[in-house]
Image 1 (spheres, rainbow over the protein chains, first blue to last red):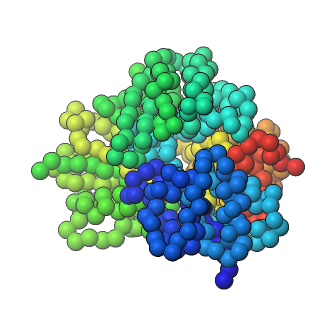
Image 2 (cartoon, rainbow over the protein chains, first blue to last red):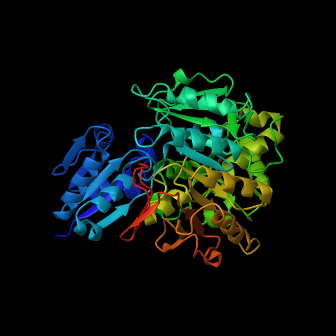
Image 3 (cartoon, rainbow over the protein chains, first blue to last red):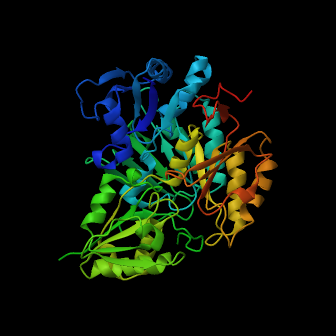
Length: 249
Length: 249
């Protein structure tokens, strides 16, 4: 039997935010490969093999998945959120490029999902309602100078900015450095949102400003959004208007 | 009975890419408000009122939805994709801000969905696997100079760039102008993807380069992705590696 590999994202957390296409791929799989906490979200099925791994071994995980698919298994690689956004899809194609020539002929498919910034935005209103960008603050795989260059460009372009991986125990200082950089380029009253566990029953929102934002309020489960110059608050909601005519008063 | 308003996105097209949370909100609604083609994707339910409107009347549509919710109806505003990305959620909050004071106390909720760029990226691999930005090329609601400023900033930051609304019958020239601007700032071999009808059974992909990209290949159903300097092709796939170490050869 010919093997296959599908890369999926389980969405931000709640089962109700996983697409039916992803649920169907998971149900058809003979083998699931992924970081333990993401695999734990997938209902157990008898006869299905689970290959749980630690975080930060994405390439090993991708190679294992490709080897299993090449041996004829129906493999699903499980990410959270959307698999193409700071997740496993890029790692799979990196592994294809560096790996066995026959891996290029495998039946590989990516299923899109709801990425964290969309769930975070929905919790607070529509802060990504205009042009926006997504930047990972992790410097495990890129130089911090690249992060700085992108933060500066994002401020220069007046984008709303979604910050993925703002902090972890091993990286406690990046978010503070990012806020410092942005404070030199954007006004102190720019809205800043800390959204923890977006798209789960435990979602928590802190609405603050760039001037007052405390980086210690973010952890691994937090998505931080820094507004554009037009981002504004109405009642308990924060949104970025589609039109430039509505400047912040 | 107390009214409510939920803003949803049906995803990129296929029913299998609509989240169960959105399907449940649609099933509970007494009234659906939206642009005709998006409403047409929602299964008919007896007793449910449909308020279909033309495109480009987002604020009127938002006001109608808020009035219905204020009168006690269970209203769902229907967008395509994710409602917070170039869609109805921002229009709803604009209408709240400019509208009746009691609208601020309404029970309003936004349900996240799969936005077009994620479905487009999944069709071709993982071109948004690193930092990226999303820019709408429509100048109906913002000045073209703002679009230019953001394209320049996106190139300066070496983001992968997702271009929403690249072309329509009324706006045939914007994408060509955007490519011209980017050609002055990025190398001619930068990968460019035209993904039409992503996330539907009719999806079509054109993989080309910034030097060779023909803007006339885009229409209203096309999402265009311009790569970062590291974006690369492997077999039939295009992806942006997570690491900077893998530069394009």
